[in-house]
Length: 515
Image 1: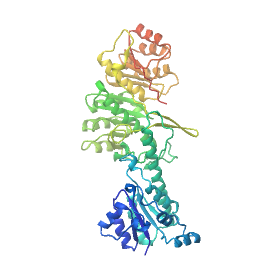
Image 2: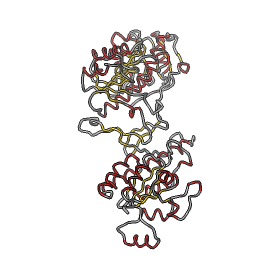
Image 3: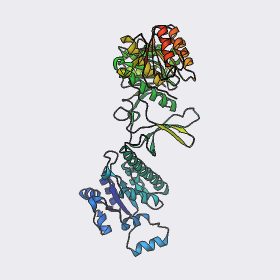
Image 4: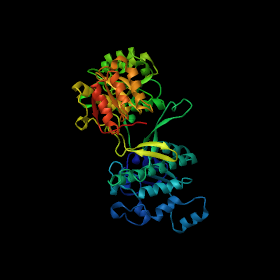
């Protein structure tokens, strides 16, 4: 007999084929419950676990493999003569291979899908990987069979590789249970502990700089829009390509869904900051308006489009500044070829809605920022556009067109690194100033970039104006309306400055810093 294998799997994918291969190589099969029934129905000789333990399954299947005759066979150190004597004294046979995956807790969370026997089998076999192989992923069945067929046994490196995968499997499983239990406790705004289990999903061309290595990881069991991305052309993605694309893709979808401002949208992002954005009647126009916001910064940026790329939009993009990445939900025939001819290295990505599988933020997702010895943790920042919750505090009231631009400017200011001021006119960004320690400096940058386009534009500030100077600067450039959170002790002075200049001011009551 080549060896003894214990099979106890919730996911039955490929298990009958695996059993057939093992039997063909002379292995004896042991199996629990439904796994034994699956193997038997495939015509394979299989010994039910209860025949080994001499004890029936009980408690509705909660207890079946939790028995010394199973775990001693898995955990025995074959190099220790004392272990061998103890097995012989109890007439226990060693188990050489454990094939086990766990109850589908992520798909159906609940008490009855919390596996106990499975993790115990997996951890026991992984602990004793010097002598026992453990397989938790049906995707590994193929190469395991090939190695057994070729060598008659699993090599040391393979057993270690499988053991690592097994411990990662149980760690992610336990993390999912903790997160579920946290969700049952509405009294805790933030969990008492966080258990991140990440798997490498994509190797990147390099990290933030070419001398750094980089990869994209995803939370185990929590796929995102990135996992559905199809790269239609261009070189491999780098760390910054992914980071900037994430910002661009989220923002363009926010703009296209922004109530009265909604429509075909285009965004240009550079270094995680928007440098151009527009909503228009068609995609080609939206792209041209977005690039016109800051054509110099747009070179080498990330272009995100809210609708499939038409031939007209592709033609406009070919005439525009070179982009490092183009993201869109689809491409008409020849559009990809038109864009690729401009610059073969441009990454052309086809993607689904941002966020989790449903298109929104993944449930229970947290915003994490590393600090020495740990992380800062907060909930995700969601930017509201509930106009009925906003308050006009000046004598002047925004026109309907200004309201639409104020909504767009508010989204742009929230997406720009703080301190941030965004100027918008006619559904397009005309000046963006961000990343400044002084809010009046951010306003000055936005005005400088806008030039003459500031006249009649609207402005948004991600935080309150601490003094009247920022509003005076904007009004002096011709800005007609301002939206800001409010909340400063000098709000009355700031509002007075707006009234003196005859501009409208709207307070949202909500700050959107981004650092």
